[in-house]
Structures are given as C-alpha cells and as structure tokens.
Image (spheres, one colour):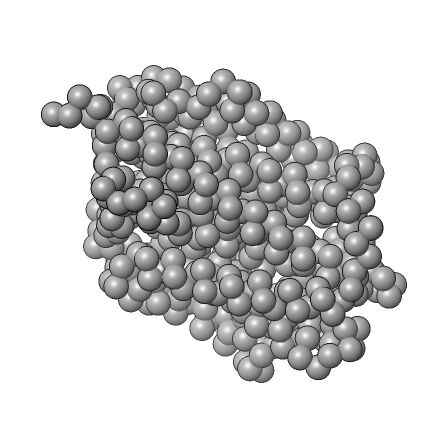
Length: 447
C-alpha cells in the first residue's frame, strides 16, 4: 500500500453505512495525473449547487421585504451571513473529505439514537420549510410568466424529481451543468434590472457598515434573521457534505489535502457569486420600492407588478419572473438531493436510488404543497418569511455538530480544522444561537 494512504480516523464508533448518494458516489473523475488547472476545474460544481440555497425564493421574499422597508441597511446582514456561509461550507467539505461521511452520517455515528433521531426530525423540518419556499417561488414564477394558477404550479414542481433521476443517469456533471446554466440566466436578469434601477451607490456602500439598530429594532431583527435563515441554510450543510463525495479524489493524505483545497475554492467562489445576487435583490428593492415610499412590499407577485412601471421598461417584470422561476427550479433540485442525504444518512436505509428519491421528495413536497395551497396567493409573503425564520431557528442544530466534529482530531485525523478556524466557527455558532434566542425572547414578550 502507498505510504501516504491512511485509514479513516479511528474516532468514529461505527461504520458509516452506505456511501452518501451511492448512485453518484465518486463518479466524477479528478485524476491526479491531470494538470493542476484541469484538476481544479473538475472540482467546480458542488459549490454552485450549494450557492443555489443562498439565493432561493425565500431569500427573495426576505430581501425584498428588507429592502423595501429599511432601504440598504440590511446589506450588512447579507455580507455577514455570507462570511458565515463560506466558513461553514468549508467545514462541510473538510468533514466529507477527512472522514468520508456526510453530516447526517456523522450525527448518526456520534450521538445516541434518540438524539440522532431528534436531529433527523429537525433536519426534515428544515427541508420541509425549505421546500415550502422553493415550491411557492417556482409556482409564482410559473404564474407570472405563463399565467398558470398557483395550485397547479405547486403540483408541477413535484416533477423535478424525474428531472434529477434523468440527469443523474447521464452523470452528476449534467445536474451541475443545469444548475450553473440557470444561475447564469439569473445573473443576467439581475444585471439588467440593477442597471435600470440606478441605485444610490453611496448608500449601497454605507449599507455594508454595521449598525446596532438591527439588534435593537425587533422588526428589523426579525427580517435580519429571515435573511440569515435564507442565506445560511441547514439543508446546505448536509447537501455539501454529501455532494463533495461525488469526486473520485483518492484516499491518500496528499490527495485529500488537494481535494479540500479545490473544494474550498469552489464553494468560496460560488458563495461570492451568491452574495452578489442576494445584494442585487435587496438593492433592487431599496432602489425601486423604498425610494418611492412603498415600504411594505413583500409579496413576490406584488413586486413583479410594481417593478415594470418603476423601472420604466416593459421587459423588467419578465426578467424578474424568469429569474424567480430559475431560482425555484434550481432550489427544488438541490433540496431534493439534500432530503435524500438526510434520510439516508440518519436512518441508514437501503432502498433503490429512484425509490429513495421519490420517498424523500414526497416527505417534503406533500406538506409544502398542502400549506401553499391552503394559504393561496394572499399569504405567500408571510409564509415565505416565516419559513426563513424557521430555518434560522433550526440552523444551530446542524451548525454545532458540524463544528464539533471538524474540531475533533480523533474524528478528523490530519485534516482536523486548524485552531483559528475552529475558534472562528465556534464564534459563528454562538452568534447564530444568540440571535435566535433574542428572536424567541422578543416573540415571547410580544415585542
């Protein structure tokens, strides 16, 4: 055996069980014999699937509400949330490459069964909340562009599972190609809209400066936590730790170190792109709605109707609808993959891949569709923002285990997180938990 090849760290109690996403596990070739840049390109993809969750329809609702009500003030929240995301997603790649486990498998291995099952229930709840946002966004996008009723649009979104099954039969790179193409369309749509909106760039720069008002104003804190929940999403932590393992990066320590470097670059660049889109949504809302005194715009449909007259171009609402639909499609695809990783990892079930995907999709889509149809058009904005706050409240139950595992040398071996990174990650985890406690306190006392 090669002198550099090492056995997995011995700090785990049991075998991980079946590999994460078995039908595409280690299916993307990243041979060490390739030139450096070609090997780096082979790692491009998972970061963009993760980035999708940072610009989903739930993010649109919170960013539009925040931009219309408070102007550019909450841009600092988007920036800080993105910094947290970069650190946490890098830890996900570290966990996957260092231990060979996704986050769900690591939790099942490390905690007593009741604790693991509780974490599984919370993860499923987070995915259902995520799916509600994706389903609503996709359905609204279909309604805005094609006039399809919301209820029918919700049912159409369930068909994405067949799209995933088809693309994965062709290879996981096809799934990534679809996601990246749709992200490109979103970027073009927003670039045009921002150019038309002509925002106050001085105010935009000031919006990235911290302010205590965000913590002291309960309404602003509620929207800030919504943006946090829409940016750093629990299901993304499970997703990234699973899809990184689609790369056949080898088992030696040098190969794993190189894989970790390229995977971290991939996710950091992709999340920087996501920050630009998130900031663009908030800036667009501030430059169009807040500037004209329309401070209570939160419905995506309402934003779509108002944006044309305000920007003075008939194509503007169409660009808005196309970008929203692309976001919705992307988000439902990645949420479905995350659902499969969560169910397989926590429960260690052994079913055919297509059946597992159908079951995990049904677990999320059925309640999401029921709630969406029940609320109808009138309640979509409140429901979207609520789902993002629910995600924010769920976040700590994924973040704390992730930080704990990656800082444990017995579990991670040579790829344990450096002390500075572990301290920074613990600080992020504590800040997220503290903000959520503040939100709950404000809610209880009726602020």
